[in-house]
Length: 264
Image (cartoon, rainbow, N blue to C red; front, side, top):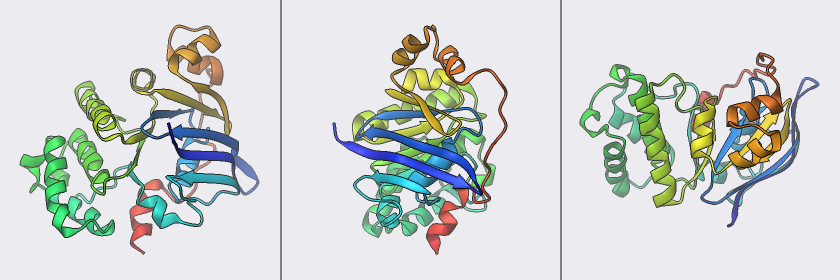
């Protein structure tokens, strides 16, 4: 397999605090890759660097053949993202949210309508395309965010806790869709979650980050064997400890502001 995300010796410091500390890992093309860690471990900071929102203090990143620092636009066109925080315009309809995203990504008008219809049908929102997003449930909004993130045919989809707060039925629906997307379109999936059973069932490989460092990487079975445990949750706790964490780093620029930045 070819490598689509390559990270070497990646470091990010904030006012003397090292949020990400000499991290290295690869994600292969077409892989479903989970990135796990306690609060404040460095997950969000790493994702922000991968998606051009933060500039690394040192180290190298290649995403789909491009450097996010020197070629941010090329990298942005390579991926779609579903933010942890809502990023839809709730005063617009589902269709209008799709249209705006298509314009931002220069999706040709000849294909924008067709692709929007296809994706909205696929996430079971076609009948609600003319409804305002503020009328949608949490699960419907998540499904719309996924459809929107795929509109420009990205090679990679980043999912930052995409099922947070959703009911089991909606969570299963979303993951079934993601698996189908990965299988049929070959889309690389990079996701974070605090639901260990999701990572256990969905991810082909898992990286665990803590205190800014990658402390383990491998399949779910690899991590269980490494820690002599019977579940991924037990393996995670064995590797990261059971102490309750608070956010160690909280930069002002939230990931949901990325669309505003791209419009500039």
